[in-house]
Image 1: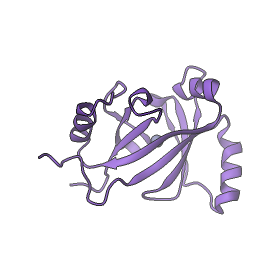
Image 2: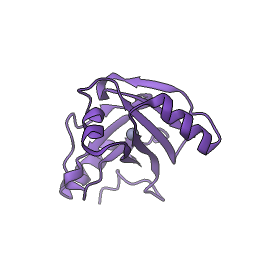
Image 3: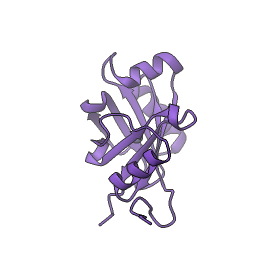
Image 4: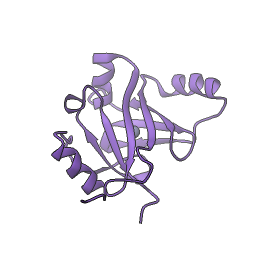
Amino acid sequence: MNQGNRIPGAPIIDHVGIAVNSLPDAIRQWSAILGQPPSGEETVPSEGIRATFFGEGSGRIELLAPLTPESPIARFLERRGPGIHHVCVRVGDLEDALAAAETAGAEAIPPRIRRGAGGARIAFLHPRSLKGVLLEMREDPERG
Ligand code: ZN
């Protein structure tokens, strides 16, 4: 059986993504609560977001704000308001992980494989195929 999508001990939560209207406001509040500043801000034009992360390695918190009114995050904020947007798990081989997810009935959001924050290879599974959860899969940067 192909175990290429498994990491021993997984699932590992790489990060939880939180949609916010204003990155500076959210950074101020989360910095005060977590007692630390975020690691830096990043613009991801392909996703239409500006993002920042608190912490390093697994278990980070990502804040994401829309770059434009057409950004998927802008549409999410309009529909649902600010809040938890997605959960990201680390996977071994992203193709294997996607294939397993699709075999299990999950639906990848096109483009199937893309570059996310930090240049990582990522994919998103549609919330309608996962009981309302938008799941990001991020290829383990330490693999291979
Ligand atoms: Zn994310």
